[in-house]
Length: 427
Ligand SMILES: *Cc1c(COP(=O)(O)O)cnc(C)c1O
Image 1 (cartoon, rainbow, N blue to C red):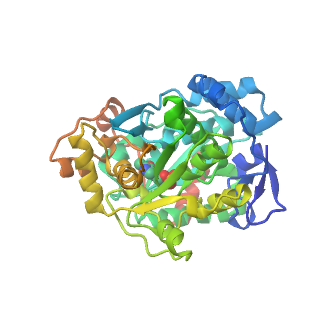
Image 2: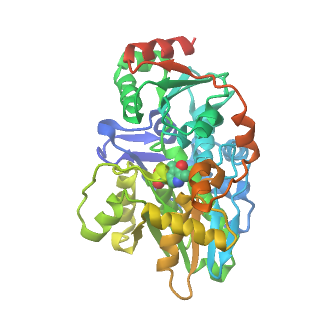
Image 3: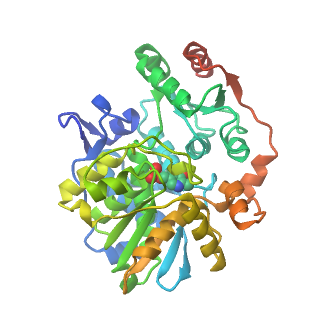
C-alpha cells in the first residue's frame, strides 16, 4: 500500500510507515495512492464479517502483509458484532457499540493495535494520547497487555465522567493514566510538546494513536460492508447512511467504502451545534466557530481533522461535495429524538439520535435509511437518564470497571513532570 501526504504530495510512504508515523510533514494526512475496487460486491457481502474484512483490508494493504497475517489481525481485533436493528419502516440502526469500551472507536483502536505490532521494527513503542473520554478508553483496552508497547493517557482531572474514568483508569499493567491539573486543551498541548521534543520522541518511540492514523479508518470501512450485508439487495441499492460526526473519521471511512464499490446512494453528515461542516457545505465558506459544549460531547469539534481526506476523496472520485447530505441538531432537538426513538422501543443516546433525526427528515420515498449508533446508551447514562427520567442499567463491561480502584497518577500541568513519567514507564 502506498500513501501520499495530502499537503506535501512528494512525501510517499508505505502502510507500515503511515501507521508508525501517523501524520506526514507539515501536519499533512496520508491518503491511499490507489483504491482497489471489488467488482462482485454481492459475493463479497455473502462472506462472514472476518473473512470479508480480511479481503477488504488485504486488498488495501497489498503485498506488505500476507493475507494470513491480516486475517489473524482482523480476527483478534473484530471479536464483537455490528448488528443492524429495525427501527421503523425503512429505517435501521447500525449498532457499533458491542466492543469492550462500548463505542465504535473499539474497531479502529483494536485494529490499529494489531497494525502497529505487525509493522513494528522491534523497538519499544510509547503511545501518548490525550482524551476527553471515548478515545482513551478504546486505546487503553486495545493495547492492554501488548508486549513492548506502553500507553500513557492524559486526561483533564475532574472533567470526564466518573464512569468514563473508571473504564480506562483501572487497567494497570502497560496502561498508565495521568490526571492533569488542567483542561483538555492543556492535555493536548502537553502531548504536542512531547512530539516536538525530538530527543524524547526517539528515545521512547513515541506514537499518538489518534484518529488521523490511517489504520483506524481502514478498520471502520469494514462495518459499512457488514451493515449492507444484513440488508436485502433491493434495500441496499437505495441506501442512505447518516453518520454522527465530530472529527469526521467515521464519514471518511464510509466514503472510502463507497469508493471500493459498496453501492451507497448518499451519505448524510450529521453534527451537533458544532456545525462547521454543514455550514461549509451550505455556503462554501470554511468558518470554524469556537467549540461549544453539547450533550453529544464526543462530537464537540469545530475543526474536524479528517475533513481534508473527504475533500481529497471527492476530488479523486469526481464526486461533487453537494451530493453529501447535511444537518446540524441542537441539544433540545437531540433530546426530542432520544424520546422519539424510545417511544418506538429503541434506547439510543444523543450521538446516534442526532444521526437518526437528520436521516428521518431527509429520507425520500423508496430509500432505505441507516443511522450509526456510535456509543452504548449507558456510556452517556447521565444525559439519557435525564432525558427519559430513567435509570438505565450498566452493561457488564461498565459495571465491572465501576467498582474497581482508580490507578491514575495526578500531575501538574507541567511538561518536565510529564517527561519524567514518560521516561520512567518505558523502562
Ligand atoms: C468519536 C465519536 C463520534 C465522532 O466520530 P468522528 O469519527 O470523530 O466523526 C461520534 N460519536 C461517538 C460516541 C464518538 O465517541
